[in-house]
Image 1 (cartoon, helix red, strand yellow):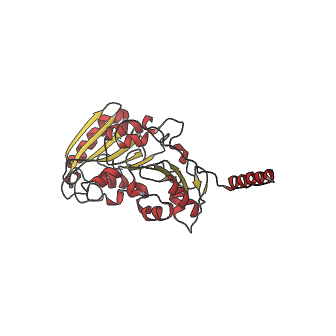
Image 2: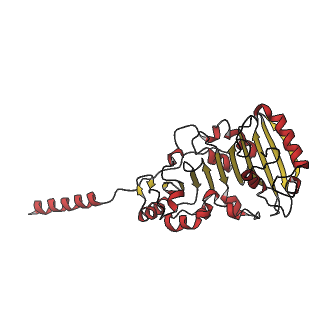
Length: 312
């Protein structure tokens, strides 16, 4: 009788254990290197550079003082999806330390660093139809627009990586050489320095290198003092052997040129310009944003292919 009861208890325990769901994988973030937040984020993502990078230091932007015009940039490339990401997947861009997007759609991946709860994200994503182990996915669906930007979700500790359904989110904390060591990205990141925002593209303003020798271009924004209207804009160009010509063209443009589509000269948006050539064929422009001028001018000029001295 006792033996029968014991066997029954063991069987019940076995059934309970067998029926219990497997514990969700708990991934730990990979190591980061010392340095500015931009370089720390780059050290988490494997290369090679696929032609586009966008970075926002969300924590420092939130800490203020406010820089007018950057409100819509706080979440980087995911900012327009802030509400559905929070509601459906529990991805909280407001709590993030930084947001880095690497690559172009549909291969782009975005690393949201800090402020996330992996268990909450997994539970919410599963309830919303995402499936999988350490990486959860859902096929692209017109009925669910969020699948375009976050069809793949990979929580990593207090971070999360998202991308389109076929995006290689495993490039974050992967085994390959990271973007901080990339021969193009690394020098441009060090040139830009401790930026609040940064965007890197191949060629001159995204137009392609052609015969100019320009490999990539980066623009960034640094905080300057405590005045919310003050900021330093930074332009860095991987110009190679053409660095002297590029430096001369940038210098001339910011002093006396103007964008093709604007009535105001570059000097209305970029004051006190300093142009210099750095090691490795890098050309850097640092300029002050005057009161009342948009702090996002260089970002917009990059998108319009109207960077000073590089338009075309």
